[in-house]
Image 1 (cartoon, rainbow, N blue to C red):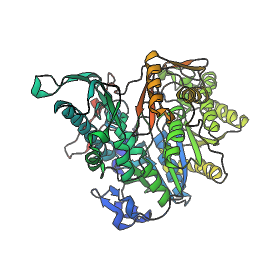
Image 2: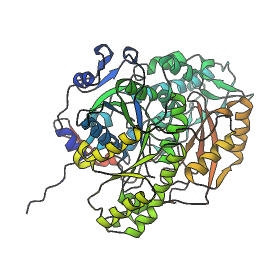
Image 3: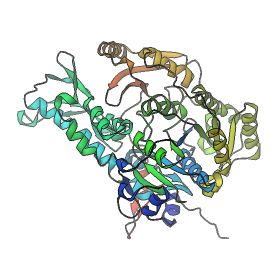
Image 4: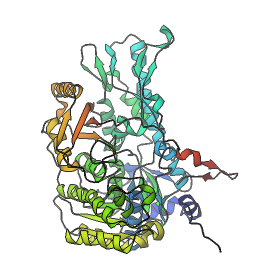
Length: 557
């Protein structure tokens, strides 16, 4: 008996026939003058040479609270775009760029899966066009310039104990969370405590993603608060006079990256990971460029609707001047059973009761999207272990609650497996919505956070630590309390406790710090035990990775 082993994502990607990037650009009506090729299958776009207005409709893909069982949000995003392309719609994908942290840590890759992937998969998952390296370099250049300023006489009177700016690296490295720099005597600088964040949780990444032009990028960089003086006055990048140098380091990275799906749908990949500790959406520049070039733009936001989608709508949409015309919530029966209390190794067994309990997590995300004035479509991502009883349970639940739902099988079938979903999305796009943000910027910090906790998470309220309360008083003093809120919270639960699955109730979110990110234009609220520098698991995905004798990657997935 011959057993056929399914192809891995990497094998599928490596066997795909890619079109030259010039052909993809031509399909998207990108002027030749705007195309800056990075080899045969990648290019950057000079946005200044792309005419027209950003008028395309935006489809935002989000998901239920993620589980180890997998939901397939990026896969559905790509598959939906391919399905719309099969229906002869003028469509582009606008995706986030993978971070080496999760690629080498837990995820092993982040370019979709099966026959719904963006290519070249290997390149995109590794160094791509060097954007993340440029962001890392700009961040660390600023750190070096801060320490040099202090070493050279400290004309700005910066208090080394109150420096907010950290160094970064695009890897999960818990050993770097807290370090001491400047040791070794007077010639080595001024000793102080420091630390590292992961690159994609940095303010430079947020600035990069939220800037609307190169000029806006420079202004945002100049507005970054790096710390405080001995008199507790804020110190800005513009006082150091280095915003020009930082912009210079980022100017090429700031151009969106053009690639393709397996089916040849044009895709822009640019910035954005980590919606649990950062902004978590791809760049405004990429989304707006896609809206110039296509009638429909399919984009995604990190993790569940409580994180990425909330930030897309309350932060990105507000700063970009557009909103989602449709929202897709990705779910799997496997993941919903896990939210219902089933262990990972028992998910293949039929369990309708657990599914019914887990559906409550999906229900909350539906309520959240509806709170923003948008009617969602559920993409029920198929697994071969789904039973007819389980399928009928969730389909009946959706019908009884007047929720659109579409069975989706894009991993196996590519765009063909997303046709039902695409048709439902097109129906939503043809219907005007009532999109609005959930809070007013003039609301107090406490009011804005409470709104997010109650309306998005379904929690009872918020507890601010004494440290957070002091920080809020300081933020109010400087007039920074009018900024939107970027919540840093575990992705695994609607609460700030990762183990509370499903739809927890009557919980309180603890905000331990409120950190100003004036360049990005928001305030970061750190909740629970969330870290801005993650650690690696016991068995990192890197252990599976290798390179063959021909120089091809092995073990990405």
